[in-house]
Image 1 (cartoon, rainbow, N blue to C red):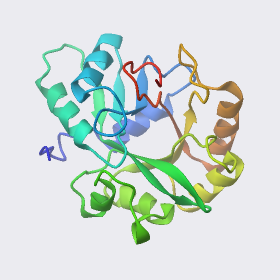
Image 2 (cartoon, helix red, strand yellow; image 1 turned 30 degrees about the vertical axis):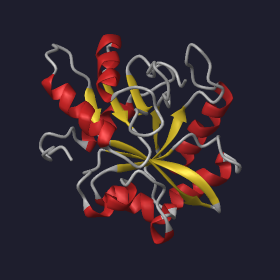
Image 3 (tube, rainbow, N blue to C red; image 1 turned 180 degrees about the vertical axis):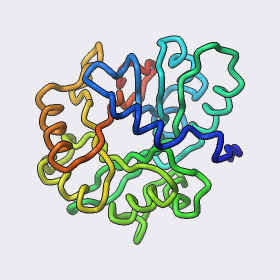
Length: 224
């Protein structure tokens, strides 16, 4: 694991400042908080993600591989060695499968310390099992590691966001992924009706909102 000192990592406060200004056009041109690499089910190498982020002028991003921070660590090292006048901010990230209301959902973690003991069960490359599987355990683990927990794509599950978001909020989740393209349009754009639903719920429950392309292909500006 790459040694990334706490004072080197961009702060959660800085992350909240970025989230505070998000709107429908923030992704994919300004911020992108949902990206996958070859270290889970993506096709891009971590350095390719950073190269594209720099080329497109992103201000900040997070690599959110499933149950792994290996891609984030490689990307962070590459970013620190990159000779560029305008480097984006790279926060730690992960996507964790867990149980909520009897369904498997995904919780995105941001800005956490990857070396924290409570994160260990979620960084093994596989879905956590047993006592580590409930969202009620995942969410506070991310927060205890200094990070923020976000319910990914709330309108993609077999239960509606109107049920899942209140349940996640009751467990202390920090935010919801509001700006998301559910039908994989090209060019990428958030789905209007579903975005409106999630934004309304975020206001009702006082949650942060995030945005991301959920990239699995060769272009960070779209999903596939």
